[in-house]
Image 1 (cartoon, one colour):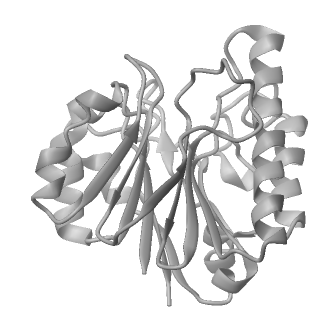
Image 2 (cartoon, one colour):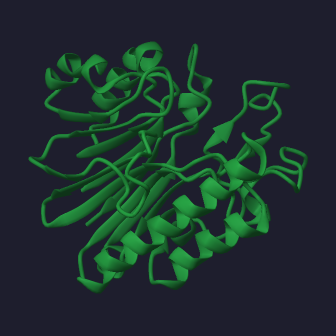
Image 3 (cartoon, helix red, strand yellow):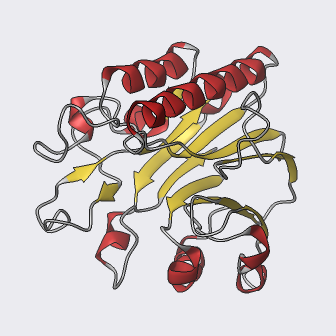
Length: 256
């Protein structure tokens, strides 16, 4: 089974990119982030034509996540359990399919709104860990994938790409990412590529792509039973070199 994640940075601008990529790669499930549209405006019809059922959790102009799947699925949650009831940020979708729980996330960046914005990021990560623990305690096969907005280690960003004060590399963010690993989840990309950079994001500014000033912030975390069956985990660098690309590239994991 192939499960992919991709921050498309606006589905309206990248609809054609996603269609082409699906036709070429045929994942069983694709999670999208930053669709930047309300759920009713998500362009489901073209993807239905490719054999994918879609579900979107959106908001106007910002954030937004979606899932496209060739297998039948049931949506379990459209918001991260444990967040305040009034939290309207569209960042989470959880589905059940083929006996697995699959979660797509767009984790807060944490650099905007000063201390308040960073505190929101950390609180979000704490609630994510709580949800992961519930599923692990229930012995569910789980994949948590998406844009985590965290570089787990120094090797996960190019020298000079970020200052040490950036929320993506701050100690508190990394501690919470490590908490997920200590709970028993496996970082799929690092399981397959334990050494060296594997970037998933290059900023539009300052020639970051041309200079390979990348970051690894798009991840897939697997529960133990799925980690044992991991076949591959790859970032599709070619996609960043397409005309008018997203600043992120797809990451695909294959589970036997």
